[in-house]
Length: 326
Image (cartoon, rainbow, N blue to C red; front, side):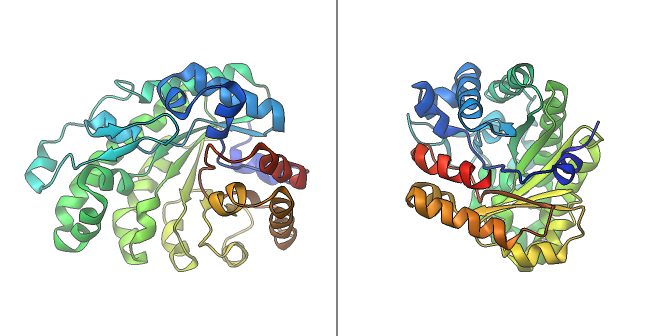
C-alpha cells in the first residue's frame, strides 16, 4: 500500500486538496451546527462535494474546538459559525497538574471518528483524512492563547506540562482515526505560527514529532498544517518529522519548495476568504492557474486553500478552482 505522500508523488495529474467541508452544507440543506454535531450530516455534505467536484481527498470538518471540549472547555456554537472555545479551563501550574486527560470519543470526537468510518465505507480510491488540532494550539485553547504565548517565556515548565497532556490525548485521537480507516490526519497547529522559530522547536515540533512517530506507517501519515507560518519558520516546522506540510497565505510556497527535498510534499496556499469568498470565478481561476504555473516543475506540490474554506463560499468559485486544476 502506498502512503499518502507516495500516492501524491506518483499521481500522473495535478491534485487539489482544499480544506473543504462546510460549503457542503449548502448542497445538503444543513448548517454548520448540524455538521459539527452529527456525523450523518457531515458525511452527507462531504459526499455531496465529492460527487460535484470529484475531489481526490475527503476529510472531516476542521473544528478546532472539539479537543478542548473533551477536556471540559466551554464551547460556543451557532448555526453558521465554526464552534469556538470560550474562557480558560486552566490558569496556573497547579490546575495544569490536576487536569485529567480525557478518553477519546467521550464527547464530539465521536462525531468525527464516525464521520471517517462512514466516509471510508462510502468511497473507493479517494483518500480520506481526519482532522485535529495540534499540541501547542490545544494548550493555547485550554490556557488562553495570549496567556500561553506569554507562558512560553514566563513559566515554560508549566507550558511543557500542558503540551505534554495535550500530546497524550492527541496521540490517542490520531490512533483512533487510524483505526477508523483514515489514510492520514491533518494536524492544525495555528498557534505555533505566532511564536519564534526557537519556540516552535521547543513547544511544538518535538510534540508533533512524537505523534508522527507513534502513529505513522505505510498506510497512515500526518499532514502538518499551519496557516500563519512564514518561510523563516520552515526549518523549525520540519523538525516535526512529517512528510507532508500544509501552509497558509503567509508562506512563500516557491521558496519553501526550494528548501525541501523532492520527497517532502508542500500544500497550499490560496487564501480562503480573499480567494474563495471574496473573488469572482474569473479571479479564482486566474489565481489558481498562476499558482499551478509557478509550481509546475514540482511534483511534490499540492494546490489547496491556505486554511478552512468558509461555509458561505460560492459554489461557482469552487467550480472555477476545480476546473482550473483539471
